[in-house]
Structures are given as structure tokens and as C-alpha cells.
Image (cartoon, rainbow, N blue to C red):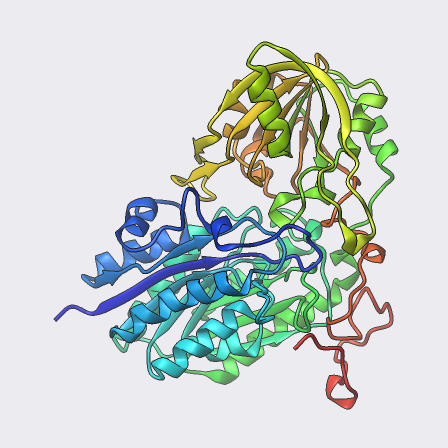
Length: 506
């Protein structure tokens, strides 16, 4: 009899400061795929789920795919949505299986739990105490005991932008298949350092993350089954947020622990490098204006949809226009109301509207500030295009109804669903050729590099407005363990958290 595998996806990076709600509908467009639809959408794609399907099929397994849920980052997941996703996975396992492969994120916070992945894995383990479970996790996972203790194999991405989603799933599956044959005995170790690292310091081409990932690869080359560095997601105000490492050895806990400690010590040694230092917005735009050749990428990183931003703050575009920049293309502003107004006006028609600024951000004490613009409606589309970069290759970007407002100096892509620009299709699908533009304003942090780095002449971070800002002073952290660097600059490497009561959201 062939082995039976349950293969599923449940991914969300939760920004607990984000005002954007997270109902079940956010996890799929037009609906969350279940059953055979999961296979149809994800087989052959550059995702961890795609890799798990390939590995299980290659091993001749019988496959059940209960759900593939993946939502753009936003606020805490609604309790009912979380339960429905977990119920689908657990129901498949209760029917009986020999192995489970889960494509997870690692930074999900739901209304009912601070540890979305750990709570799911703990529930699965209670249903099937001996079930082999292999998971893949995002580089921005916030690790917990419940995640590590309730799976058999854990491997995380080693790239940001996440170009190795497929490879990570394949790596986790490969170890699991060897373990099922008795060829290896995975033993895991994990640990943290008290660093609330910032996302803009986690690119795999940058220090300090790049050299640390190289060390992880060296540990694997020296015999470890896997070594994963997790920068963590710092905008999740939960106790365990922050930097961590997981190592997987073949049968030797001491080897796993020693490697884990080496990597964590290296991360702590570079602690100051994990913090992004921003310059004033006006200075960044002035610097961009002084450059001779384009495309020049202006990163509106404080309002990044892929970190839970509202994707409708207008500060960077306003400053660019105020300083006289021209030949701009921007992706993008999430403003369904503006899209409807442009659709009603019609392609080619002139329209004046208040763009963006529809969302208040109470967690950082800011209200929405729209920007009054006049221009022509250049295009209206359904917002769907195929991803061609390795990060999610073969999946469909679903921007929702999308329109382009052309003011003469700027062409602004306005979408109806939160979408980060990392594939050139976000412009080309609406008739804009990004390589022909002098300036590209992108609401992105690092993922833009997947598709845009090859065409960029210059890249300038712009310190705009939003709930994905790197200014820690904007955020009232209440639940993350303390002390932690840089919120507590004198934090020791090994705080004795057990010595006193710590803030907790549990």
C-alpha cells in the first residue's frame, strides 16, 4: 500500500499594529482553494507546497490536499477564519495518514492565539502523536517551543526576497523522505537571542543577514541536515518575536545544539547591524532628484503591503511631486473606492479624486491623509497576472480590479487588493513599461529585488508613513519579552527572563 500524505498551506505574516482586517476571504481569490483545486493551482509552482507535491508524487504517495490558504500580511487573523483553516487540515489527518507536509509562515497571530502555527501543530500532535510532520517556514518566522517540539523536520527560507520557497520545501521533504526510510534520524535544536531585528536589515545580499546565512549553509556542508536562521517579524507584538535559529542533525542532539549556539552567537555579535537607520524623506527625494540615470527605485517601505501596511499612505508620492520629480510610475495604492470612480469615468477620461488615505492607523496615532490628484484614466484591468520570478513562480497575482491614473508627471497603479510589487507584471499587466521610467515608487521593503533589482540603476529607501515603519518609537510594544535589543539598548545577550514577570499577551 502506498503511504498517504496530507499536504497543506496556511500562511500569514501578522502585523499586530495593522488596522487591516484578516477574514477568511483574504486567504484566497476568488476563494480559498481546497481539495483538488489545491493541486490544480499549486502543482508545478515555485512554492513550498509545489515542492511537497512533487516530493510526495515522486515517492509514490497517495496525496490529500485539504487547503491552501495564503493571505497578504495584515492584522490578527479572525478567530473563525483560523479555526476553519485548522479544522480542514486536522479533518484530513483524522481520516488517517502516514506523513504530513505543511507549508507555513511562522509569524501568524490569530485573535484566539499568539502562535498560529504552534497551536495548529500542537493540535495535530494531540490527534496523531507519532505522525511524521515536515514543515517549511518563512525567514521572518517568530519561533516558539510549540512549533519546534510538535514537528519532525523544520527548514526555513535562506533568501529574502524569498527566491527559495520551492527549494526550502524540497529540502524539508528530502529529509522527511530519508527519515521515513530509516536513513536519517532528525534531531532538532533551537534558540533565540534578544534581538528585535528590523526587516530592512534581513536581505540575503546584505550584512548582517547575508554572512549569517552563509554560516548556516556552511554548517549544512559540514554535515548538518539543515540550519535555518530566522530574522523574525518585529511588528508582531508577541512574547516570542525576534531572531532565532533552528538546526537539524542526524541523530546527534549535541551537534545540533553546538551549531545552533554558533549561529546565535554570530548573530548577537552583529546586533547593532540589525537596526535600520533612516534619513528624512525630503533628503531621500532630493538625493533621487540629483541622480542622472534611471530607473531609480524609491522604496515607500513604511507602507509595505507585505508587512501589513494599509498600502494607501501618500507621503512619498506627495514629496516626489512637491520636489518636481517627473516620469514616475508608482505601484501601488490600494484604494477600491478610487478604482470604482475611475471605472465609472472610463478609460481616457479626466478625473479629479482624493487618492489613498482611506485608512486610519490608530496603533501609531495617525489618520488617513488622501492626496488630491487630477489625471486621465489610462487603463482598467481585472488585476490578474502570472508571477514569473522564482518567488511564487506560476501562481497568480490577484490585485483585484485595477486602474491607472496618469497625472502627466506620474502614472499611479491603483488596486483593490493589497499586493506588494516584486514582479514586473504589476506594471506590465496594466500597460506600463517599468524599464522606460525614470522613477519607480514601490511600496516594498526587500521583495522588490526579486523582479526589479536587475532593472534598477539606483535604489533609495524613503521614510514615508505607515504601520510598517522602521521607527520603533511609533509602536507601543506591550507583549514582547523584555529586555530586548534595541528597545532596551543595554540588553544582555542572555537575559534571565525567568527571574521576573514579563509582559505577556497570553
